[in-house]
Image (cartoon, rainbow, N blue to C red):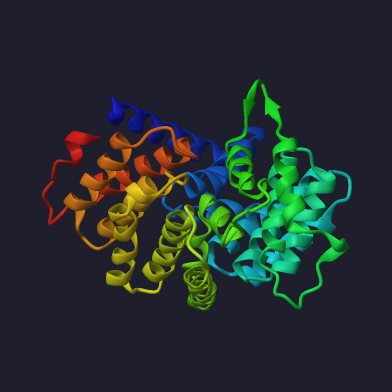
Length: 367
């Protein structure tokens, strides 16, 4: 059944590719759909290995023909982001905002991307600035935007002046009241932000250790900075300081959750820096301590997923597939579960696409 669905997906992509290179109105629509697929769908819901070369090939003729076309500048910025060229991406998004003033929603898409670009660079004030703009101008998810504002404020140093006199604790406390339902459903990212914000409701609150870096993982941002060693090393430094800060504070019931979160994020940085053994130890730590985790149960299947991808990337296909199946079958009802399952399926597809020593293991039967 899964093979049948995969074949249908591949046929659909092939038809879009054929349509993209025909000279008709439909070719533009096919190109837009493929650009969305290669730069967003496969990245956010996959393992961060989108086909950037194909996206560039699709975009090139349109960008040449319409150098000031906002939508093409936006995708150009997105491609540069995924390549790890963050400064170039920022320039492209700024060009996109300048190219037109009538469709503000397009500006908001750029603000969202700019917010993450400055997060990758650990420029918390600039990231806050764009989160603040979104919270004031866009209605997609006030809860998410205000959560991100609070998250960035929590990363400010003791000597940093907080804009508008805002306080992260009050902002976090306001997040649950901003919940929005679309067709009776809450947005997954919003639900995640609300659940994390509840830590700030008691008077004896326990602050989140690195909230913007945790949300960055939800959006697969470590696959972006992984293309740039300087950004990855900087992020690892921030996480190491947060880990030391946790160790110096009195232990609470939430300490294992926070320790495992930082282990997961540090493991991703170490993986992208080529420190495979250390990364493996960090991912394994979470699995070994899963019974100590009180609230952030999503960390366990995601740690298994990241460990499995690490194994697949290093030729340990059989071990990787077993971990993916374990993450898929053994854990339920955790935060961002659907997104994690999409990523697991993408990793399983990766495993099927790369036979181990030319011999198909049990992965083909699984898929």
